[in-house]
Image (cartoon, rainbow, N blue to C red; front, side):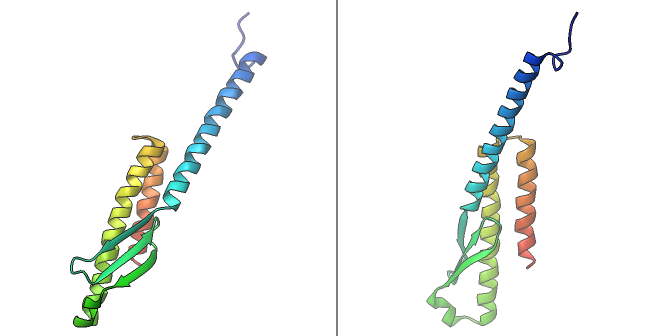
Length: 129
């Protein structure tokens, strides 16, 4: 008589050990990805050397540094410089995040693509704030 693999106690134990191993590996990978993205900081400057901004992995502005050159330009130009630098930083954050996700989750990973979409959505969402 042939029994189903999951009905056989030894096969069931092996299946559960394998399943637990896959779950543990997936959890460790997710934790590693989270830590790498959490520590990400990106700095970028505008093309005119007026400002440098730093953002975190979700696109939130962490710091802004102005150069003395802002004293010689109109406030509107300074505002545009901040927004330009912010856009550059967010695009760079998206590219670095993609690389981190691919390195951590593996290229072509379905879970990695879902996470990447969420990261990109977050970075685009902060552009409207």
